[in-house]
Length: 311
Image (cartoon, rainbow, N blue to C red):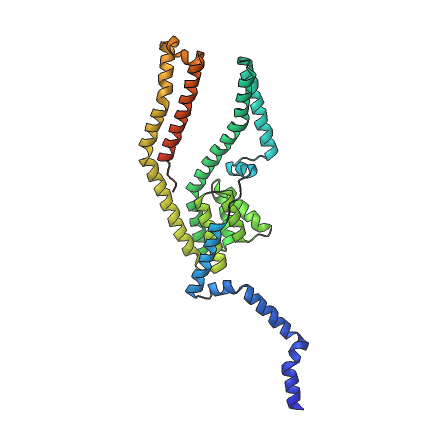
């Protein structure tokens, strides 16, 4: 009877008590998070495989088309899409009206209005976004250093982000404030930093997002990884400054060459208007002006591509 009772206890009791179901659930959870545990277990091969898979996922991730709302956010403007569109339309109508007052040609007024209402606002967004990103790149290594010192001192990563969101200069402060707000609504640190890389379309933000995501998935020394990242960011900044100084002469030459035809045209217009007036008063002259502007645009574009370096 004792033997039968022992056999019943060994094989039947786990089903009655629910231990088998608990073991099955534990095994399922362990299988779903096996890759993460293997990466954290210290096995270099498994950890390397996890990092390679994460990098491959980042590289193959397709970038969505940038919307107007994202461009407005990248420019640092506190406005909405409808307000921006209304302001652009109003500016285009104003320019078209002013041009029509001075030159009552409806086609010329329409062309000027379209350029002012569509081209000028988008150029302004690009200019403001480029200037804001330049400020971000200049201040971002300092923010990474703050995170490194905080992590070494034992602060949680979220507290380091809050410190930057309250004390760092703009635009780093506003971007990290959005990371903190994203965590407050339930997103993980990895997901918040991925959105941060989407809002700031530069390599520095992507590197930071990759480091945080890999540390969350594979573990490791975060301060050491961020220290290496800070060194890379500073070296990139030095390389950009070096390239800028080396290409300054080429940019000055391109500016002189590009402006020379217009300067010569103005000099001839003031000294001998009848000589150059043929270009504006005849159909052949208008065709020559159009062809010359086209070739000048192509030449300026080629020179710009030759002296611009992507680092």
